[in-house]
Image (cartoon, rainbow, N blue to C red; front, top):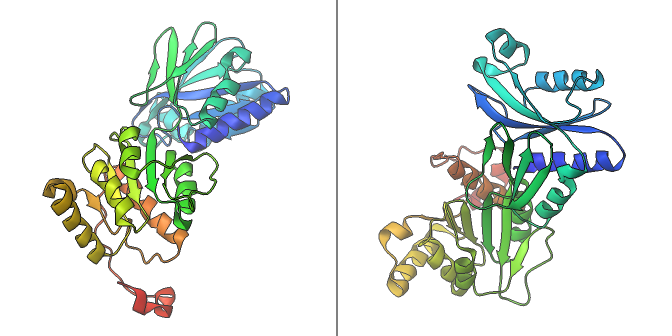
Amino acid sequence: MDNVDLQVLRQVVTWREAGHAVVMGTITRTWGSAPRPVGSVVAVRDDGQIAGSVSGGCIEDDLIARMREKALVADAPQVVRYGVSGDEAARFGLPCGGTLELVLEPLAAHSLVEDLLQRLADGQRVRRTLDMRSGAVTLAPADGADTVLLDESTLVSTHGPHWRLMVIGAGQMTVYLAQMAQALDYQVTVCDPREEYLPELPGVQRTREMPDDAVIAMKPDAHTAVIALTHDPKLDDLALMEALKSPCFYVGAIGSRINQAKRKQRLAEHFGMTEAELARLHGPVGIKNGARTPPEIAVSILAELTAIRYGWEIPEPRFVGGAAASVTAGCVV
């Protein structure tokens, strides 16, 4: 579940606390092109107010109209499809003749939306199982890959952070990086054993362990990124040493190209790291985009993470100058 859908759940809880009836729709399957991925949710209030999105807007308009006409499900979950035919696909704004399947679920106390939201606020990953006959829900811890499975009797969906980011160092840049990463559905952990650091960051896990111990304890997988930001080899190198041996999809470190070369030499000479392991190190961390301030650098880092996360390789950018660059052209490297 991404951050957009988390906002939908928060809105659902607010509406229900105000006494409104709410129907929630979950995308369970798509054919062809679809604007939102499987597992995305939308919610419609009894007066037609809507939260979230599953299409370019036409499906939402239909759901609103049906809610106002009291034509949406009232007692038990129901499976609906949009865009079965080419004409219907065009009517509902689905590109390329796509088809979208939704489970529409009338929410009640046994839907456990409030409990789900609390678990998500605690940083948990949750497996939600919906009984398609009764509408009753059970919640359990989730591990492994995201799952959305629908059969005649149940809908199983996975909620909560699917991607993890460990940041070594708790300086000013970490604050921006952690905040932005949470909006991109990362569960963020900040590691810094130094007493002078580690600011309060809402929703961010913190640890004062030594970085190598923290990375090992995290048990990195293919949905984990580790980024070292301290400029202190005693801290950064320890974390990188363990991260580069793991299945992390991204390992990066701040610092110039010269410092990156020195770092790789240290890791090879003192820790016996191989060329293949060191080749996985991204440094200088982030996309080269002229970033200078901490928030700009955070944007460049997350842009690179996003590209790699979805399998894209970004070629080396080429400096072409411009009004902003002319002020500090001597700083461009």
